[in-house]
Length: 290
Image 1 (cartoon, rainbow, N blue to C red):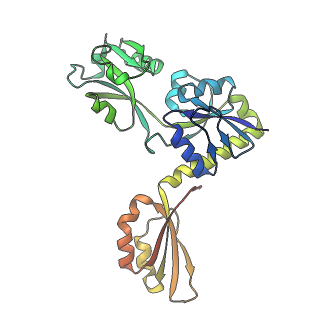
Image 2 (image 1 turned 120 degrees about the vertical axis):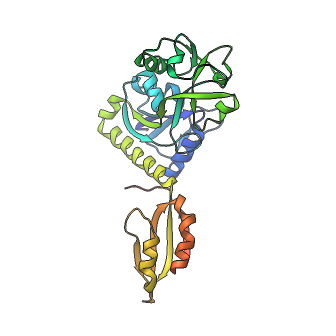
Image 3 (image 1 turned 60 degrees about the vertical axis):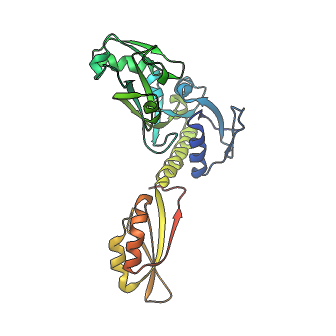
């Protein structure tokens, strides 16, 4: 019998979420028509829910925990426990942004130019609060989709979610301001969080998911190094901690192993080779937990 009811985001985040859970050690399977995916953990039962609805269902206790964006928690003003931030999105590990965008030829240049204008967005409540905070009165309308195509005929401006800005540029829109940056959150129902068994299970899940995200940008690297070149090789290596050094059966050689940012590997490989390292092996990581 399951211990926690877990909501997983259906839609744009679904594929990246399933991939993250796989790296964390969980196998999730769902057909294209199901809303109840299977997971290889008898203490978890899953339900696919739109990210926009996740915070509300979690706050109400329909779900014990769920994954959704900070933007939707703020939009709904949901009273939930923010267990941890999970820095991933549809296309990568960067935060997503909610931005105010207008047509390229619009006379609207600054936030204050929105006074009296019509704004279309799915993030209605947060947008209204943001404008009120900046003392700007404008008409904010809910957009049911295809928000980018509404200016200039149906709206003067939009507030839209973007990762790279490419869709906005394709629709000849320019950004005038970012009103919110958002990452994915693991959230929990307040009553579930007070239950020691459920809390421990949710905390365990958070630990594994965070470890999987850290591992996304890290790789392991090991190599053989002549003892006479060890200091030269170590001077090249950035690492999370002091590199692991193991003596070979040949006292003139040792092996060195480190964890480092994947982005630096291509630049230091040639330097390591020139410093005397050989047998260099790079390998992927599933989880890195500090």
